Length: 358
Image (tube, rainbow, N blue to C red; front, side, top):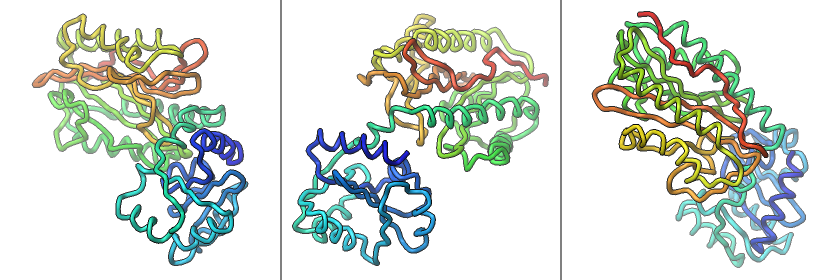
């Protein structure tokens, strides 16, 4: 795993004319090395790759970081780094500008002199955007757990329970099935609160004749799932049914027509144009989707401002919604992988209008 990813990183480094890169982001570190410890740094040159960590993780790092020279850094990480750079005769070092705060950058400038620092953005993330077969298998497992969790929740949702308790039930169920954690703060929003796109669970008590929107995801084997389902408790009004059907139509249309070569803005328009045609464009204020992988929000973006080009192997969410203040809201979300022909769903649980007896 590590060797092929480092090889691709080196190709990207050559394009940027980088002789070495210093990786400090924890997700990027894990992606390149397979090392799951909480502390470590990666140095990759054009012919050597190092994982620096402290004494707590030396055994674990040696077992996980295949193809890396594992180095125990001293009290000063910068001093150990400087010694390695001198050994490899490195004069310029790339660093992840989005992961390094200004004070740390200033310290590197002083501690690594005379090595020149070069800010780099998105180099490893550009590799992570394409999922290989092993990653897709892991993501399918995470998606399957999300589906199972939704089916479980259909058996426990009822009037009289708090949103917060239902969110806890989601998280406990996922953990019992092997998830390391939730990928983000679980959303359970009922009644008028379902009109809040990111309405995390509150003390509000579920009542009859209202929507319940659930948005959650499992971090399983290092990869995320992200699913939203909206269900009805009790008797729906025509308005409930109307907005649900519109969102479902927009979501299904997007899944049917999503394809490689499409830009993020073109993908976004697949859902947005339908919702706008029904007169609810102003009630759909967020993007249609986003990339998914080791983090719950990655590239590419499916938004009206995105020029990202969709390519096979990318995993994205498709999650249109309508949110009406004072009434409620609907979002329906699936995880999909872009294929040569279009896209394939990873999440497969039902999206039919579901009514739970009050």
